[in-house]
Length: 126
Image 1 (spheres, rainbow, N blue to C red):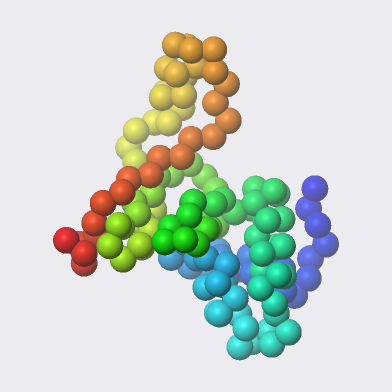
Image 2: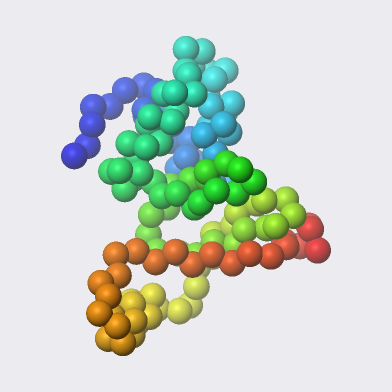
């Protein structure tokens, strides 16, 4: 069920979709606060929860103590740098549907979602 639109809600989702940095709630707040002076962290958190529930965004997980978000909800992987904590989208040549089919054939599972995340150091942190 899609909720009513609002100026703040639209600005938050657009900020997420316009960046590939996989932002935290704090980053989103800091980016939008100069233009939306009455924005609160509570509003950001409430809308992030709503967007996740509506599957408009996904959580990449907690990195350096902050939950990070992705506006791309199609299947893809991530690389998280242990040094600078950057997150990079990874488009893998592996067909995820074949992996899911193999797993479901070998065990009595029904796969709803796949998260593939690599951890290491980026070129800047090596």
